[in-house]
Image 1 (cartoon, rainbow, N blue to C red):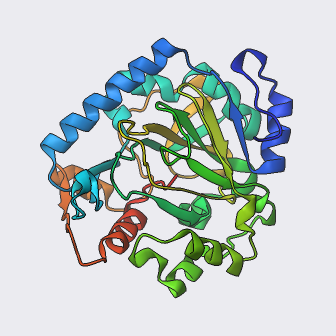
Image 2: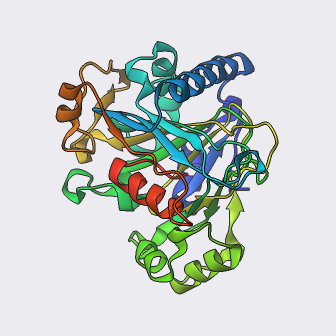
Length: 330
């Protein structure tokens, strides 16, 4: 548990801010009601079924991305299968999900950390399908905030936030966080160590992950699971080390609705989410991460191939694709 995990009814902005900057993450329980979670869940299920039916591989149209990849082991067969890992910016086309991203309760949480004028650069639906080998090895989100000139003072001006649509536990592959690793305020070089060790060429073992962390000066025994019930909200710092394991449950797709927010004064890209606390409509797509977003819009969308089973190389392909498309790894 973090130092302070209030229920929404007892949320105290000052105490929440203190816990977040002390630990590198924080949790608010029961932010959204069961009825609201059910509404999100309905939209998530609809998107999952429709996107897998419509797209054979990853599809990109501006900032809207449908991220289809492979993950062995689905159905116990051991070969790579098509898996819908995520959808970015569904809010362009989904008024229900759009309303949640600028909900007044999220504003209370976000503004307590980065102020009342906020830009949004991440709006992502995320799944871990039961039976797949989908996992995210440990990393820091600072590696994806590029170019650095467009995302300034990240420690105090940028947060990632996740709404639990399904239960988030060790069984379902919940995020694990290593508290206080954000306090260095720097990239610890995990990506380079992972490359050196070759941990992205195959599903890494716990021993390999522990060794990877040891090489950057982190004790894996400090890991804490970000256990969330549907309707809870978790927030984490871009410098905190975190990752997530495999979903070993039988029927939970472990849906997670992820948002990334930056203080408007220090974030040059993205959509304005709130100005002085007033939510702002999305409007036309704007530059967020991919410089060719206008090209793919003009084309009506672009497909990236799904490679299937590549003799143990599939996870590396997925890793490279995730970096290219700025897909959040929770």
